[in-house]
Length: 216
Image 1: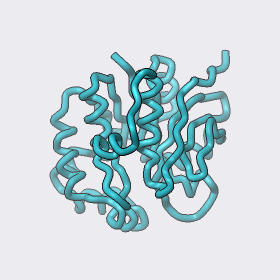
Image 2: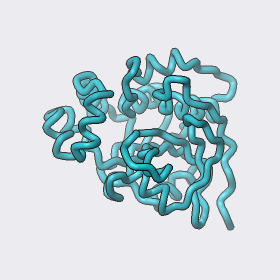
Image 3: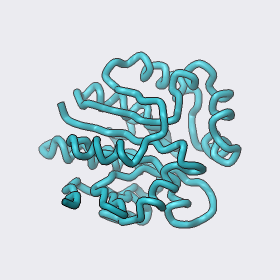
Image 4: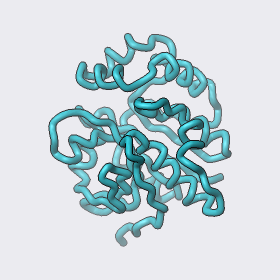
């Protein structure tokens, strides 16, 4: 039996093209709590968004845990090492292309502090390894909504690196459907599993990051 398309509310990125995390989070919150409305301004605050900067996952994970959600993070990123060694760890983990881009558009110092908060949290389950397709299928079947970070350039078959977050709406036999906040924004965008995982694991398949969220 094939998987059904999940009816997850869709929200587009804002004009600055730096709010894919907030758009994805807005989708999750509306799915689980349809009577509540969260503005982008509020979501900026709870996700530690800074003007002109990327939004990391850390503050969002802590916020969701505080709201009482079950949160699972499967990632090759070691928050404990980052909290301790900061840029030395990032340089050892990323290619120079990714490191230089993140350094330009991230606040490493603040993110290091949040990483320390995250590793001390007992409400977020952190699995330190690359996520697998089997993880995605299992967690989605168990009622979790899945967020995936990927390189949108690789997804669009372009050279370069541009981090992006999407919300999975269906995992089929050969393809994945997902809400892409954009820009341009595409509801239930479709890509082959091979292309999707290549973009998620950029620059290799050993670095796929998955966030799974479920209402308790």
